[in-house]
Image 1 (cartoon, one colour):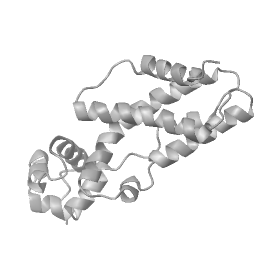
Image 2 (cartoon, one colour):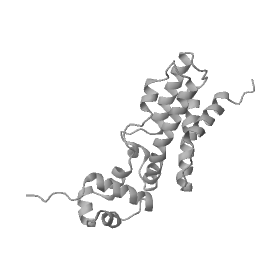
Image 3 (cartoon, one colour):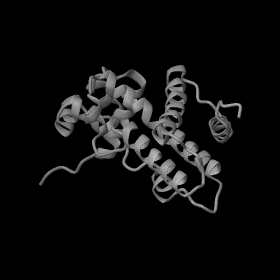
Image 4 (cartoon, helix red, strand yellow):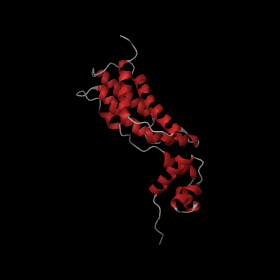
Length: 193
């Protein structure tokens, strides 16, 4: 009869994620195993290889919290700019957690397509937001001459905020206020007319 597992797969991924985020992709399997209270050979037997563990621990989680907002909207009964604020706040929360993982994977040499797997990445987010903006334009809810460019701008400012927070090791506060200011600035545009 096989001995029952003392450490779950979820515990391994959680300990590995913490170690990779703290020490980078070069952290040793021995250090991760130590966090788990098991030997490095036992960990290696469970995970296959360090590269497999890196990808399993750091790959973005599945659905983003703003998927439903993009899929179901825009809602005609609500102001489009208020809906965009909600999308940016949800996107910031998602990318705040996801961006450090992606940066760690990339630093470990993982190619972008492999790291995203079935999860959402920057390209699908931009595509889905552009489609949302096109629907708003078609419904007469907003004037969006170039939905793809506007999606790039909106996603880009969220990505920049999250990357800088990670690099500076300092989380900014006031996501809703920041999102409101960002949408207001883009909503008005730079054309004085």
